[in-house]
Amino acid sequence: MSVEIRRMTREDVPEVGRIGVEAFNELMARHNRPPLYPNPQVGPLAATAYLSIDPEHSLVATEQGKVVGSVFYRRRGDTVSVGPATVAPAAQGRGVGSRLFQRVIDDEPQARSMRIMQDSLNLPSFELLVRIGYSLGEEVAMFTLPEGSREERDGDAAVRAARAEDLPEILEMDRRRFGSDRRRDFEFLRRFGKILTIHGEGRLQGYLAQMPTPGRTMLGPGGAESSQALQRLIRGAVGETLGELSLVLPARSQEGVKALLGLGFRLVGLSNLMYRGHWQPPAGAYAYSLFPESH
Ligand SMILES: CC(C)(COP(=O)(O)OP(=O)(O)OC[C@H]1O[C@@H](n2cnc3c(N)ncnc32)[C@H](O)[C@@H]1OP(=O)(O)O)[C@@H](O)C(=O)NCCC(=O)NCCS
Image (cartoon, rainbow, N blue to C red; front, side, top):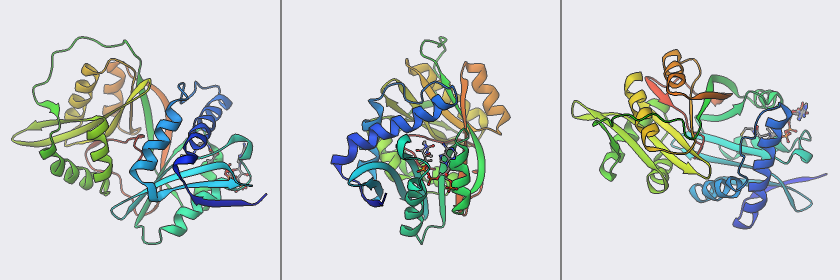
């Protein structure tokens, strides 16, 4: 069957959102794991948000006019962050995903670095990405803190919500860590979520975004000068969020992972940060983000 790729429109959102939830939940079910999106409402909401942040970089694949898959990607300085990419389970294994990923590569010849987060459970997608030139950057660990597992803690005077005037310093610190210019993401996060900061010695020592979604508040992106500063930000977020929390850290960070386990977080998945072109592990302590997804 012939596959066509075109720019996504608002009318595609319900189907793109439905396929996104179905593809990830089916991947989890195949491995006897709980659904990534227990609340299917998240699909269209996430698709709407991705499309509104980067309308020019959202693509659908169609077969006989029917949407069967999609990919969102974004330019952040000279870095291109790809994902999520999903293909309807019934249409998988026929080359649709490869076509979508290849189209992003073809459309972004100037990119110095391309990055995508790939679930370790999805062995075919790891193979697919390596075939089209991606390498493994690092393994990342996704944690959740279930609703209702909070302990009363005193607040931390150094931790507070970012103000508009903090944004340039946050962006500068973030760019130094990740090498991407994520102004669009941080503006979105400040508008619809919140960014926590930690200050000391008269300057910014770390930042951590909080993005509420139905059923779960996602923490990240975040970065800090030390593991302790990042942990204080995480404790700040835990202290002020009632529902379930999720957070994605580099899996090799023994100190960071152990501290999360100590707070009651549980490991729910491992993923791979894959890159094409330039990438180096960010310096200091940091957290990745899955929504809005940019690396
Ligand atoms: C990743 C994803 C988009 C790939 O889409 P796709 O259309 O199946 O991809 P392709 O058919 O182009 O390539 C998949 C490769 O894996 C193989 N494959 C696909 N499904 C398979 C399966 N169930 N069992 C074994 N091999 C499979 C294909 O044969 C193909 O290999 P080939 O290039 O040698 O033919 C799709 O699997 C998906 O939506 N997964 C869930 C969401 C996800 O993990 N997204 C990626 C990160 S955001």
